[in-house]
Image 1 (cartoon, rainbow, N blue to C red):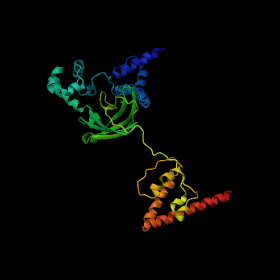
Image 2 (tube, helix red, strand yellow):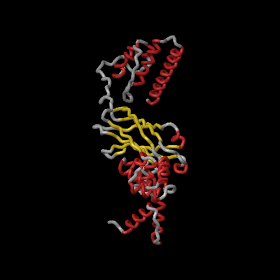
Image 3 (cartoon, one colour):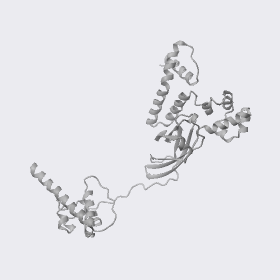
Image 4 (cartoon, helix red, strand yellow):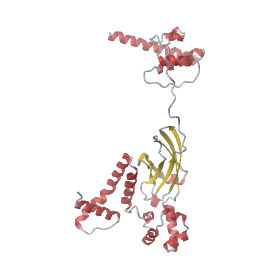
Length: 353
C-alpha cells in the first residue's frame, strides 16, 4: 500500500531536481536528508542494475544519477548544463523550438539566432556547443573463438576542453549491450584526461561473448558519467562476420600397442624410467618427438605424461647434437638430478615400509 510518506518524499525529490524551495518547516529536515543522501542512493541503484546486466534500467538509473547531481531533468535541453552562462530566455526558446543538439550542430550561427529570435545568441549558443563533450566511436571486431569476440574500440573526442566545465578528467561508461535480450555483456569506466582529449584518438581492447543463434548486432555505448545527453554509440553487425569452425579438430588417440622403453635404444636413457612401457599418448607421439625435429603442440589432461613427452624431445637433442657443450652439460646434470630423485624416492619407500 502506498502511504502518505511516499507522496511526500516523491514530491520533495522532484522539488530538489527542479531546484525548488520549501517553505514548510516540517519538511525541511526531510528535504535536507534527501539532498544529502539522494545522489549516493541513486548511484547504488545504478551499480546494482549494471552488475545485474540490465541494459535499459542501467541507462535509466545513470540518467537520473546525473539529473540529481546537476539538478536538471533528463528531458530538458542539454545546454541547461551551461545555465550559468546561457540565459534562461535562450534556453527556454531552444526547448520551445525543439532544437536538440544534433540539429544545432548542423545550423549556422545566424540560423540559430533566427531560431531563437536573438541574433547575438546564435554565436553564444554555437560557442557553448563546442564545449559540450562529444566523442565518436569506431571499432574493429576479431573473432577469437566461435563464442568470444575481441573488440578494438577507438574513441575520438570532438569538443573544446575547458577546465571550468570539464575539470581535470571526464569519465565515460563503455557498455556493450544486446538490445534484443536487454543484457549488458561488457562494461568498464574509461577516464578521458585533458591531455588525451587534445592528443591522438584513444584505443580500448576487450572481449565480449557471443551466442548461437547469433543476434543481428551488438551496440557499443559510451555514456558520460556526469554530463546529461552526452553519449555515442557504435553498432557491431554479425551478418557477415567470419567465425572459426564449429568444432576444433583434435588428433584422435589411436589404439596402439604400448611401446617399451627399450625403444629409446640407449641404456642410460632407459635407466631413467622406472616403468617398462610408455602410456598411449607417449606411444603415439614417440616417433615424432624422438626421431624427428618437427614442432609439436601437445595438450592433454594433468597426469597424462606430458612431462615425459617433453623429455623425449630433450633426449632427441642430446642424440643429434652430442658435441655441443650445452647439450653435454644439460644431459649430464639432468641425468644426475633424475638419479637423485629416484634414489630419494626409493629411500622414502624403504623408510615408510
